[in-house]
Length: 181
Image (cartoon, rainbow, N blue to C red; front, side, top):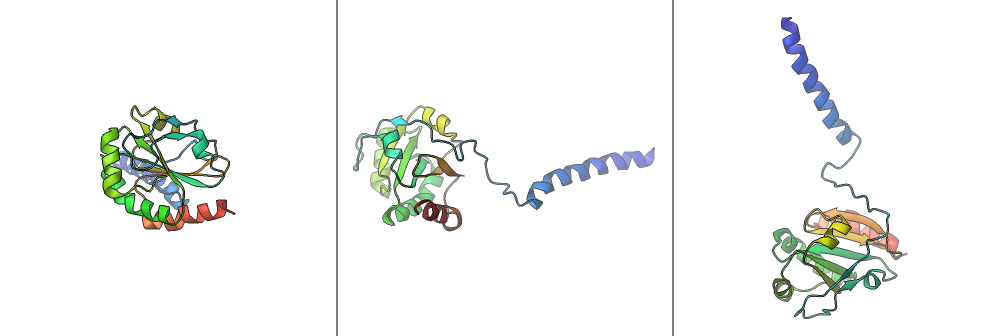
């Protein structure tokens, strides 16, 4: 009986350790969030623009997203500190000729226009998603998030969280290059 007292917790611990270790041993990234939209057509999008935006303030539509070439869609907000951290990388991608559109998620339009004017505006088009409905359609779990869309309008990649140079070099730049051929 005394052995059973030690054997049950030990067995439970070992089972839990194996259950948690198997995904890591298989090479799965524990920080990756699955997305049901990968290799699916992007959601229909028709969002108004940001009034007062220095660049094109006409909004974001399906026609903008079906550019006939690979593009990025970045979901951001002016109140989001990680968005500010990744912003220089987006500016660099834009300077390199990458087409980047954005969904401004649950944000005040005036704050967004001011934020873009202050920090730079790498986005060709920005759609305002004040109520978060487009974010739901896109499967957004928080900001920032970045999607790679191929020339046919299919979502090929999603990254939840702030972009880093490592993510750009390992995942996004090679994917954009392969899709652009």
